[in-house]
Image (cartoon, rainbow, N blue to C red):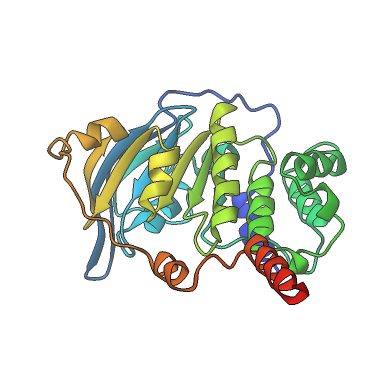
Length: 289
């Protein structure tokens, strides 16, 4: 079962009548530091994320990506530095920050006992959204889960669970979404499904901060890319800007070696169904002579 206390932290009800003043950029980070005793995880992180863009934070395991996301989502306090999300300071106004964001972690935070529709309705009610059932049905249709909405999530594939997880993150129309390694453990087809969802979010004006260790994922999705290494941002820019850091590509002749499949087929011949049928016909003709 899900921790309802954590759910209320991640999906708080909005404050009625509150003004939603926004100040660009969508995310601004200055000098964020975090240590665990003698382990210095973040050593002064600085970067901005433009509104309505996809920002990819790259780094190896243990680089501090998840720690930074937890700080930005107000689940963890930094030791030093400041950060603003959607114009609100994470230290001075954490409640307003949580109203503006959604967080999707490395593993799908869905209740396997409930159906897909029941998961969405539960989050909609926690966020005090009007007509939660209608909202749930709309998201199921949007994410290609309408036919599976009445099934228990325990029967879902990994890709379906991730789609449901992201759909839950969109309830309440957050302006900023944190996706912490959203495709970890997914098969190639499910990864492509998540990529298409991220592209759609950005096209709709949502700001997405994506952490990943998959370079191809950042290359396909991100408007800007930052690399977090040993607690610091060592580079921040567009893909084109990052490519200029290396020498220009040169064309070289590379001898291509045959694959095992090609070797096998060259030795045994074409054993496709069509070839088998042709061989059978030839054998029949020889037998009738």
